Length: 153
Image (tube, rainbow, N blue to C red):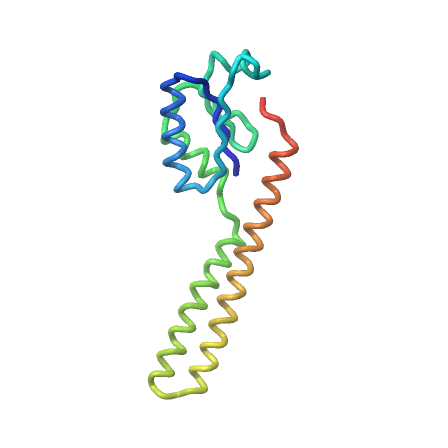
């Protein structure tokens, strides 16, 4: 997800928006681009009256004074994970649990059960990690296509 802030020099609302996005970037993990508009910029006359302006994935979402809760809501909607991502996370947790169970059997002294649980847990974890990474890659490539295909308003 890419968030672009259009701002101008000496703009307190722009400073507030920049600080808000810097805080939210830690929670929502987006790429942040700030564009300082100057009189030479072709979008200068179009957006001068509504500065600051925030685009999320190329779509104009906010202008002027911004409510933090509303920005949070929009960013959460844009970044909603899919079912495959959650299945991957579940398999990772199940893999950790299985490995831990195998290690407990190893402490009891049953080496073969320990080996089965450890190997199975590693396999389950690896499958979960694979699904999670595959879904992240698919989502980021879809987002790149959308950003490249649409131009801001």
